[in-house]
Picture 1 (tube, rainbow, N blue to C red):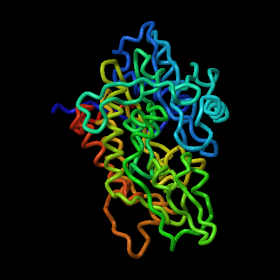
Picture 2 (tube, rainbow, N blue to C red):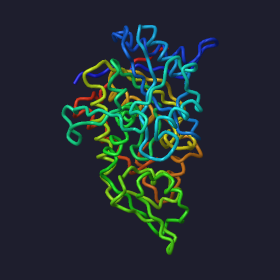
Picture 3 (cartoon, rainbow, N blue to C red):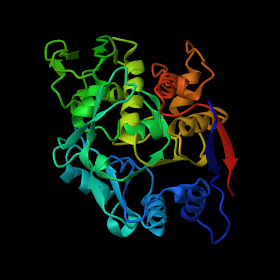
Picture 4 (cartoon, rainbow, N blue to C red):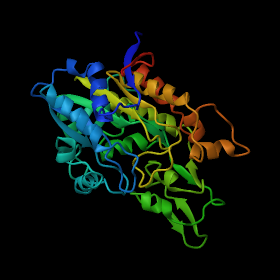
Length: 376
């Protein structure tokens, strides 16, 4: 398979030339202007960040992309779909308020914000997955699919279940409606190790499905497997490693379903992808907090191929030296820890992140082979 072109620039700037201007140059060099956007609706999919998290992409970057789209005659809007877990983005009203509080508005970004799956997260459409092995019809937010052109603007960072979150996760998981997110997460069920459970109930605040039950006698948490959808939010919420997945293949199925959802979103229309590899927190921006970055800021990447883009970002990260006093270096310092010589696996050993890129290439979403082109 022919290698895809991935364009890259670092985070250095000259006096009078800021990063938003540099991002515009990058995406123009990568060919975004080759897309016919004249008079077309252009969805810019990004993550507005959970309240309390401050590592999400700043609105300035969204404005740079939106302004470029308008320069080519397009009608851009920022979009994301509602979450399946409690938080500040589980319905459109709270989601918009969260976006506004985090600085996203038509004034700061230069375009409207539309929540892709509607008020309650139920406004979705069934989209066929050509070549899908796990998903035949993906449940995608209607506004996302109504757009003529699709652009992914991703914050590339770590992730507590998938190892990293980049373009494919931003598209596949991010564009799924609440039902779509549930479908992607639903293969594995967690278990609670009672000897590690402190009975703090922190995990219960993350469960939207009554999947957790607190035993008042033992002061320990248990799983109601009938209600649990396997979303993994409780795993990320536990500070004591008391929760794990009973099925160790669950992350593999999640990664593969996520790739199939991404393919449903981009098939049959022009699509372009941008990832900023900065503030590389160990967990998703869905968290109401962000731990210290595990790696230094690297740069901005753009491509028409989301698989090649993710692979290029991963490779750039794996070349870096871990930052001190982080989740990654804490893991490496454990006396019984097995060093996988892979920053994302070392940060979240259960993730099996390679399965996403391997399956994405298999189903024709893109290729892992790429040519990296530097843009000043």
